Image (cartoon, rainbow, N blue to C red; front, side, top):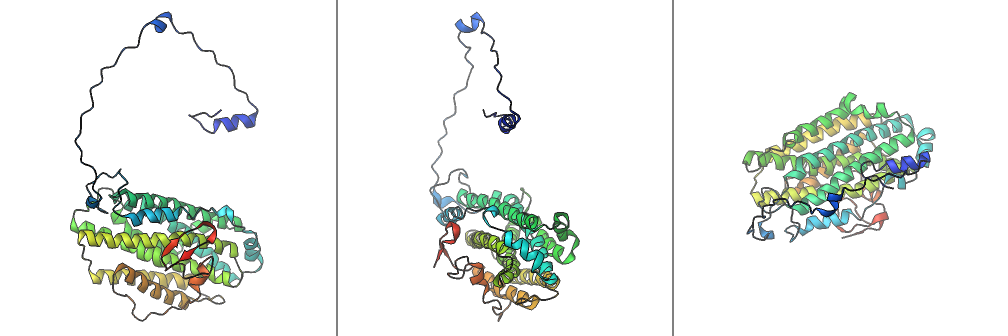
Length: 383
């Protein structure tokens, strides 16, 4: 029988072979049977003449409508993101990792092990940072519930991704204490995390006043960094070394895990970019092009340092030059999606195989195309 105070108590008792004991119940007193209960004095509820919510009055931030009333929608596209995200149900336990254990111990070179370990170390810390940013810095500042509901799903997905990396690390048999501490003790990994913290820390407090134009601009810049660079560029590049191993038939279980994660990340980045553009439009925000260029160049310098460490020795089919050049190419694409000028004019796509490799069904460009149907198990259709 379920114990509502301790829901695990029933299962523990069953395992111990215990049985429920009868409990005596005191007989009610005679006067309890005949005397009616005393009536409490309850004041009548006030009558509020509250006007119904007009969806045209909703705003992404600084809205004054009832945050608890979902519909009518002003942003039906946000609700579609939520519905699409819920079609991608999976856990890391769904994927067979047996071959990866053999690959790591018997097939990977020392250089490939170095790449694999440090990529996993960076990713697991990054997704925890992403989870905290959405949950603590962004979601509470949204004033339309259809936006918050998708972001609540996003918080869950970031936690799921962190579980996935931990599952891979544990399954392979890596030293978890050593791997998880690399983001602190390896400067080339730590500097990316610190840059993200610096860009996002200023909006992590709940009392930020988005009616203040300077604070609002700071929030938009931080969200543009998060959606366009942190998730849109760094995660994209973060997966690519593992996909390079997958192309050669190595670490296929881990790569499949990352393919599922990328299915989520495509929506995360796309949603963040769309919200940024909506805020800019609604609030008439004008961002400084110089600050935008500096933001992309700062992220690029951090990525170069990171690539120089994880790919200090190139692996077959992948090098730090490929990695860095791909960042410039993807950064241009993200900037264009945000409505910004290209930060790296003339950048070329050096990993022409990446979009196809990342797509579980090998149908079309997985990360860049518009989602029309988002199905569990890889049954995707794209525009």
